[in-house]
Image (cartoon, rainbow, N blue to C red):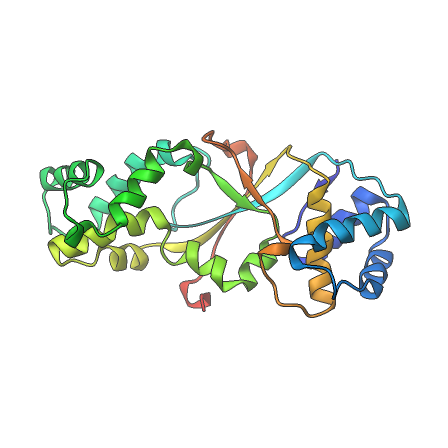
Length: 260
């Protein structure tokens, strides 16, 4: 079984060796000598992959890709139902947030708040643009996911990505901000205090050769001490279908104090 696993630099090297037949030492030597300074950042993945193919004529076929889903959740969440797309997860999100309202609203008031938010019944002074973004997500299957990133190490080193998902997932923010304006209660703060950052590692049979290029690009950035950014990563979208619990490889909770 050949699997592309970009959890760490070591797992990435080992995966590439197993898939391509090129040793870790040769991969490192190839990348250390390859000059990409004059290549536009967005083109570097393709450039590196093409140069690698020219030099080694490697095998690029493999069986599975591992992905990393970033979220924030209860420490007891074992994702028994798998990773749900937004349209299937949204009721559970509202139910959980209600448990954090600390008696500020009754269940009837909470349901009315949700109905008003989803039907655009709050003025701009309360809803701001949060209601618009909330409804755009729940009503458009382009935003349902579930999503994943190819290279875990890169996302942990890029605070623009990790903070975005770990501190306050967007859908939570869209619900909590108008609630604070209306009820003067910081529901987002309550959510953060009762949850932890989490990375769910899962597998898919989406095995495009460009992911090999992304992995090589990531390792090149490490070797040449380049700043980690999204150009050396890739994303997965399951297009509104859940990722089964059988495809989940690992659930990793991160201490909140690790976030910078």
